[in-house]
Image (cartoon, rainbow, N blue to C red):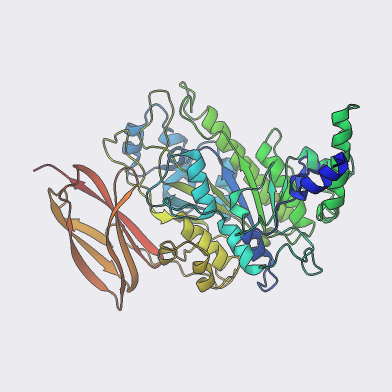
Length: 534
């Protein structure tokens, strides 16, 4: 076989990297990704865009979103060598009990403008503390004991565009379904049979693409092969022209921070959205959040590695939102952050924190219902090295709400896009302003201890759990300090509202703190229970 025939027949288009814009090369995602197909399907009449920001490494949520109420003393005692001083915590507009890290002035201003929301203690039952496995769980939307080989967004796009990529691009959908800034596409946009997006490997390649320049190939046999592969790539790349045309329509952007890799990625995203691409999903990422040691500077805990990471994220998001406003497209865009897990409550002796369970997420955009969803997590007075933040919200409910209330998909379809034993627990949460699709009425304020209680507490072998339901699906999960759901005493549809009691048998459980998590409709609360020896 001739060398060129070999290359033509064995190198898929998705593996060939055309030059892109200022350091980001473009690589074709397999467009069969379900998320991309669903978000781009013409039957969903919306021009909304979702931007997903991955904080890779397991972000320390407790030093990002910090209690400033009575829980602060427990927070400080558990991690005095990394804790942020209470007088340095930035307040959040409209939230009296909670603040954010000292360096996150950009996000603080978005809260003030009504364009940011924090969701407390987001996680899932039986959390996995492996970076790779936990990332797969978040990207697939699966249970921790399931191997799912498609992404939550990919399945959605596959629903919207079941025949993709056959026949694409079309007149109605000439653009990529999803775009990721990075060297390869991720599981998030993977459909049942193919990926639904394309990738731009770095900003440099992106700017090379739109300027029509390429990095020179060396005058060697390998350089000649590189030149040939580039030629094949340019011929097979379906979307490089539309990306270039969209980017070239935008000649001016609001300023972005320098030496900020996340800002560089988001600047490209803003340019492509403003340039008119119909792409529905953009994915960007920034790493370094695996802060086992030297998370802070010993002389000033508001500075150091984690502070630098959070400042990068905050400044980049603020610049991106300002740019969207400058371009006149901010009402079309919602963004979210996530990390594969949080960190333990108690810090370690290396001025760092170890892999943990639930952690906060940020949403941002002009259509976000700003403020805070949830309450400050319960932190024991004497936290041990095994103590984790108990989950308040299942991360799949965040995804499901965005699919339903931002991308305007019917809830029955949304439920069908998640694995068995997940869809029955999905909530529609008050994340977006009414009118984005149909909106959600926020739950009425309630006493944080009124929906679920137990007596006696502490208890020795058993206790009685009392809860108030408004009717409909009601769930109670018992969670241990490792974040694992160990029992589900209630998972029932109630015909009407009322107050109920159930016995809880703690016989055989070790002494210690447990959490009873109550969920009913858009409402959930977490109750700490203490088992002691007789």
